[in-house]
Amino acid sequence: MANIISMNIMHKLSLGTGRSFTMASKQRITNIIVNAALITVMLIIGMMVFGVSSHAASSDLEATGLINSYNGAFLRARASTKAPVVTGLDDNTPIVIKNEVFVTFRQYKASKRWYFVTDGRHTGYVRADLVNNIKYAPKKAKTNAKVKYRRGGGNLMKKAGTIKKNRNVNVVLRVKIKGSNKVWYKIQIGKKYYYVSSSHVKLAGESTSWAKIEQIDPDDIVQSSAARKIASDAADWALMIANDNTFHYGNGLHSHHNGCYFCGTQPKSKQKYVVQWEKTYCCNPFVTAAYAHGGKEPFMLNSVCSKGNSYMAPEFKKCSLFANLGHPDQEKLVKGDVLCASAHVAIYIGDGKIAEACTTDNGKPGTSSWNNSIRISTLTASRYSGFKAGVFRYIGEAPQEPEPTPTDTPADTNTDAGNQQ
Image 1 (cartoon, rainbow, N blue to C red):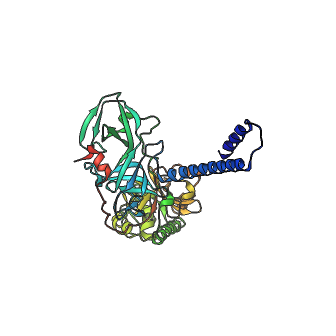
Image 2: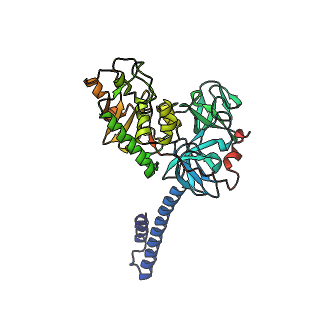
Image 3: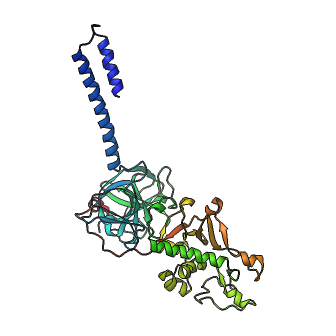
């Protein structure tokens, strides 16, 4: 810009009388050029600074807000006060809100809702009553059927009204309901905010599945040294059992689908190979036992494995001991990560390999099918693509600290008049 300005000045002066410039004229031109350059630099710096600090929402369904708590707020790995803390956020920290989460089926006040947010460095969950100064960027949508709008997300929330088919609505956020994989929308009607199912509202290019909308970057998960050791020991135990040919896959009435050999919770078999058949694992009891007996994780041992129970994707999603990573890039897996498909569970043991119990061939002891049934498998890209139900990382329990109190009434509860009880 400075070069263009200087060229224009010289061009205009050259069209004058044609007489040579005095030293004073040259000095004035130099001053003009320098000032123009300084203004240009200041404009560039200003755009950079304000562009970063404003945390403006993108073209996606996002909003901006500020942390509203004198003592700051916890950014957590899950929408629960029992979930591990990712980091702490100071009062007035700017955040980008990616979606809203309801953890109850009938209560919609701010303390019962969470936001999935980022501060530009970390992602996680913060309670809605600890956020204020929320600014939305509504997107136009149209109803494809007569639809009920409610005071909270979910069909059990109180009905607030009805919108006819083919009516325009303003969508401001995606909304997740605890235990559901369906997307809801937060919509604006006048100065109030309500909630509708996305199956009745058409938003261009929007999916009605939650599969890839909500994920925490594995880089944001802080795994303590104690949690890392438990996960590593669990993986080592799984490797040991997979290399022990006296153990076999079991999935059927004669081979103990549930229960753990080391806990003695498997029912007694009446088969010919009674001793050998008792040393069996199906996929989910195998991974559960790895954390119970290898990692010696107290909850998995005392409240799950020893009770004859085991975990698959739905249980891991609800367990505060594990962070749901969605389906991250394969290179971000760490030792001890639990990989879930719709009907299968395996444990990552490092170096691109998993330990798993996964064959339907109940062979006799000494046969190849027996030896290979609980095994080590190479995690190829094709194989990893099948673990779409979630990757879960052990992080342990969070320290139980009281949530900080807001410094004033959050703007969200003032403006969301549709949410007032």
